Length: 315
Picture 1: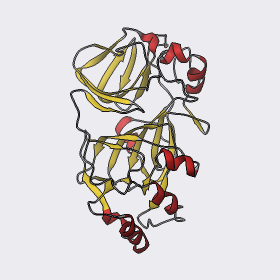
Picture 2 (picture 1 turned 135 degrees about the vertical axis):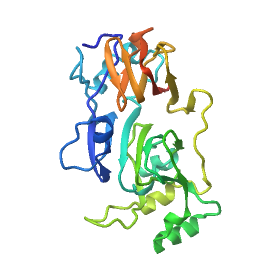
Picture 3 (picture 1 turned 180 degrees about the vertical axis):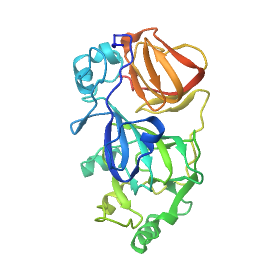
């Protein structure tokens, strides 16, 4: 069925091959991955010069997210939503068949000095193999000096805080927090619209040419007072509220209006299935509900559905 102003908008994913990626998105969600490639990231909603989300269904099929953002901002996203040069969020799915590099994104002051972008993000664990872990922040007592020595000796990973994860866990990764996703994780990532990453260690990964490290930039960016962070603790449906975005987790066992005010919302279907305005939505899909949807309703399948709901910053 075609989209109308009260229908959800779905976009073509942009698949990114990564040395640490795999085929989990194909197995879990039936995504049409390119044959023979290890896909680490699916960019589900993105508005960048080098990557642009395109609507895949309805009368607006073929239009880009950037075109909507620039040409129909108030109508589609809401008059109170921040009017930045580009859509301010990048939404991804990550398949970590192997560990990602140990890395950091620069905080604002450092980003400006280094010519990069800040990148605050939330990871939500959509699935995880037994014993899977993530790395976030530093172990208590770590200093800039002993971290620098450990980088030279190849032992930096021992100074990073580790958390064993399971399906449904979430962790906040603000700019400045050193981090890595461990092997065996399927992650929903909601982040600022940025692609600045400074790798500080890549696990002495075997095979192919070593990936470039950015040790000087990373050492300037790491918050060396950031010790042993924990998982996000939800307050009711609220997972996280920051100046960059707000994220809720809804468990639906009955119809519910998608919007709570005159602003768009981005959804990710975690489990189950949904229908909205005649459009079927399934687990593994992101969809944007435009501000014009008004009181349009999310209708879960008989077995229910779980979704993440993301809203944008206001002016």
